[in-house]
Amino acid sequence: MFDLRQLQVLSEVARTGTYTAAAEALGYSQPAISYQMRTLERTVGAALVTRSGRGVRLTQVGQTLARHAETVLAALRTAADEVSTLTSTGGGQVRLAAMQSGCVALVPAALGALRRTHPELEVVVTQTECPVSHRLVLAGEVDLAMMCDLELDQLDQSDQGGRRDGQSVLPDQRLLRLPLLSDRRCVLLPVDHPLAASPTVELADLAGERWVLESGRDRFLAACQDAGFTPRVAATSDDQLTIHCLVANRIGVAIMNELGVGAHTDPRVVARPLRDWPARRIFALLWPDMAKVAPVAALLQSLRATADDYTRRSAGRVGSR
Image (cartoon, rainbow, N blue to C red):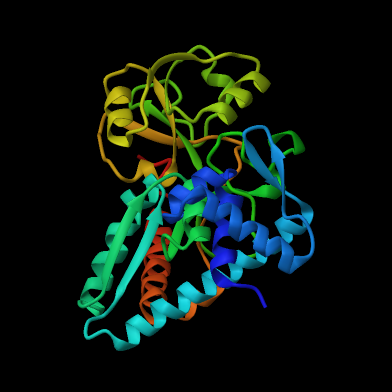
């Protein structure tokens, strides 16, 4: 049998890549981490790590055991959460991580609905990028995450599963992935722009424009290159309201996902879907056992209902603004 403390040490070494960082994260001394790893290697009967520069790299045996260790530790966290909920006099707490557009367009409405049906339930929200949310779910630091990915079957092999923009995450077979909705990539244009009357816009038709871009732009720049131009960047912002205002004041045109488009209304701005651009899939990500925890299940139900309502209301909205 494996010692849970040693499995926790292995998991942290796998996450951080060094004994020193693992010791700091767990509140141990570095020699204590080394001792726990040596003891675990004797139990396994094989080396779990090898030296790699100033850090360590897991062997194949180490990777296999670390993967199972994450599953075991996640199951224990789920058990602790469920027991805490059953013994709590209140309604429990759920920790949710979500991307920016989800926080703007879906999460507030879902939490508002949940407050009416489960007034005693507390939800703690962290806004962060999808790769960070993925790591937080794996580490048990959040109970579930609202994330996005591109339609993988529409991406070419050079795009590495949609990760070229630094936002998307490939499917993780250890985790439960529950679809919520999909949305399109849109262009924000001044209302009197020549292309504002078009139902959809071709990227190549915007070659001469100035652009307001988010900092995560690698995939967009690659698409522009494929379309035969390099965009002139007039401004950089990751704040959706700022982007809307810059477009409204003719600083440049912008691209934004459909969820973000609906977050702000300005009569000086219209949104038109980008032609031939892959849709995003919006989904909830969590450890399978967490879906059985009553507070988490309640939040999932509210998120799904809100997403369904958003899909019904948004049908035909983008392209008519």
